[in-house]
Amino acid sequence: MKKSTYLAILSLVSFFSLAEPRYYELRVDGLACPYCAYGIEKKLKSLQGMDRNTINIKLNEGLVIFVADTEAAITEPELKGLIDDAGFTLKQYKVQAYYEK
Amino acid sequence: MNSYKNWLSFFLATLALAAQSVLAHDPVFGLGSHTLFKGGVELHLGTHMDPSGVSSLSPEFSVKYGITSNWAVGASLSYDHKSGTQKASSLFSKYRFWRVDSFKEQESAALFTKIILKGERADHVSQRTGNDYLLGLSYGYEGRKWYRWAAIRHRLNSDTNSGLKRPGVWLVDLVGGIRFVPTGYHEPDWVWMLELNGEKTERINRPSGIRIGGQQWFLSPGLMWTHRNFAVKSGIQVSLFDDFHQDQNPDNYRLKVELEWHL
Image 1 (cartoon, rainbow over the protein chains, first blue to last red):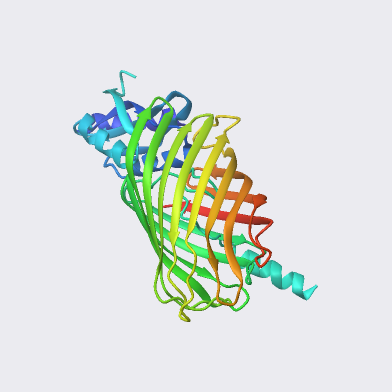
Image 2 (cartoon, rainbow over the protein chains, first blue to last red):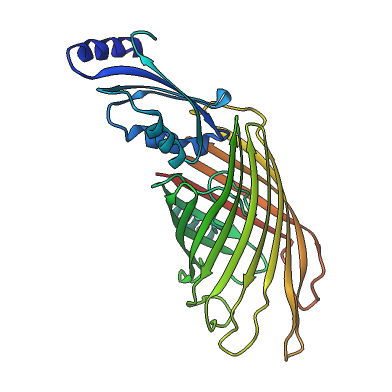
């Protein structure tokens, strides 16, 4: 199934629930090594509502991007702690409703 | 033909690497400053070959755990492949006490401690009266293209059961590395390394008249290949210089191959 179709279905299901898919873009410092970045993937996958298929670690841009479907947005302090547990530093946090993206 | 098959079967069956407790992007022979993500588990298989040893091929298995993102602990077991018996077991800890993250770069420094437990030895060396200890300090820089590490370690050895003093060893490592092509996260990644490894063994004159100790320097090309949570590291140490006495038989070369999985 195409990612866009999957997300469209997810959005439709979310419309009828309290959860809302949100697009997160994190600027992460210290991201030099793909082998080390696996810790970020592992930590993100443990989050409730995380859409695992959307996790995108862009090493050459220092960005971590994903979509999560939760009632309330995952907060910056929560993601800062998660990124720190993975061994990196969260520098910038952006979140927006997936529809706006 | 049978001996070839046996050797090949052994190699494929074990494929273990003599772990120097390397973590993530660390040098093949030297000490790096990486730890492990919090809650992470690393499985490590390796083997090394040092021709001067009685048992030249030594497989080893180790497990590491990330207590925090800056502190990893682990345990390892090494074997003598000729007799199939355990050579030694050890416990180790690495604490990263300094880390600076910037855009696509990370610099860090770590303290490493290892206890090589007193145990049965399968080779000709007498049993020890106690544990051996290793203490190390390392610095590392990692970027999307360049790598550099510097480390110093000291090994404190206990005496043999027959009362002979075993010499202490100082180890120094200077390493440079390069990633020619900065690949994406899901692509195989290649980092090529060149190490300068120095070892200084305390000089001791045995009652028998044998003199041991001296220094030796190696130039060591190596490679770390990774794909997501799996890594293969390999390298060769080529002896550049040594000043050991004729009584000793230092290695002209050493080989190492390692496999790592992050879970």
